[in-house]
Length: 253
Image 1: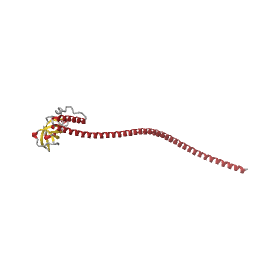
Image 2: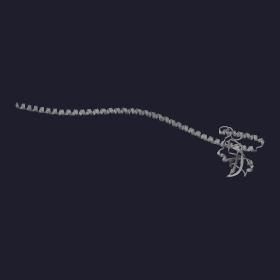
Image 3: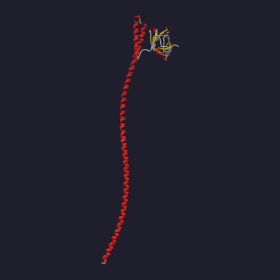
Image 4: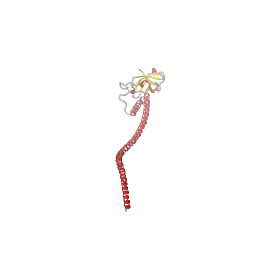
């Protein structure tokens, strides 16, 4: 009987000790779990904060992306407009080049026509100087026709005040009067046609020296003036040789 009681007492003590041990062990485990839970809660709060921040950044990026898409659309529109303007400018440039090329061809043709008309006019003047009275009126009409054609080539009528009588009053002499070219020479060097006119300030009565290679061959007095040429009668007493086209005429001061 005593042995059973002792055994029970020992078992009770062992159970009490075991209960104390497990209670202490459970308390430590609970504290550890609570600490771990607190740490996880703290970590979860940090993750949530990061998630909120990431969401805000995502919203900001989305806003910027939307704005960038709008700007890209505007840029595409501007680029399209610029390309259209560039194509139009290239087309206009091609048209302008064609117009300029045509104008240059037309100018060359007009210059050639003008030179031809001047030669015909000079020849008509020369023929008129030696024509008989019956043909003189015909040559005058031919000269008038050629002068009208010259005015047409120049794009207008002859300048006001230009006539056989001389240059408009007050017209200054140009530098060309010091070394003008003789365009043609009349029969027996009776007169010369000078490449000078009222546009250079030449008038009836002015005297020119005719020279070649620096040697004076004769002097001549202007008897008729037009806009681009003049006819001068050669003084036979001063003639020192046959005159020719290409000689140089300089005004005698």
